Length: 118
Image 1 (cartoon, helix red, strand yellow):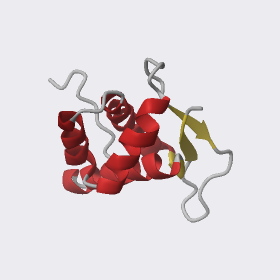
Image 2 (cartoon, helix red, strand yellow):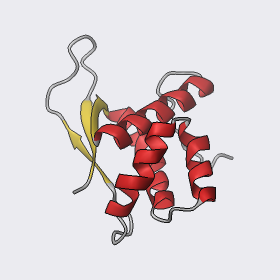
Image 3 (cartoon, one colour):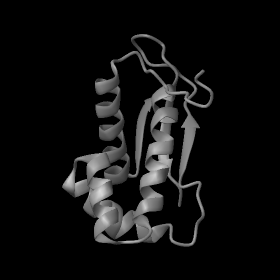
């Protein structure tokens, strides 16, 4: 049985999904917010929240774990120097998803912003 093993499939293979979530997480960390489909926002939200929790304590081990999850030196540096310290006094809820009223032009997919709080 697959109790509590839900994953957003996003219509891709597992390797492509993992790569897409890594890239989305790196973009959120670098830019603060991104616009993408609502399902992708929901898929990447938990991933980013766990990375920010990891970045609240700056150790070599945490940096290496974050690099293995992101594969981007620039994103890891931003995560530990700017984003992590910003949320030191907050116990979760680092991101917010804001739905957009209009769908995407080509396929009318539901669109959303995922942004860091504050």
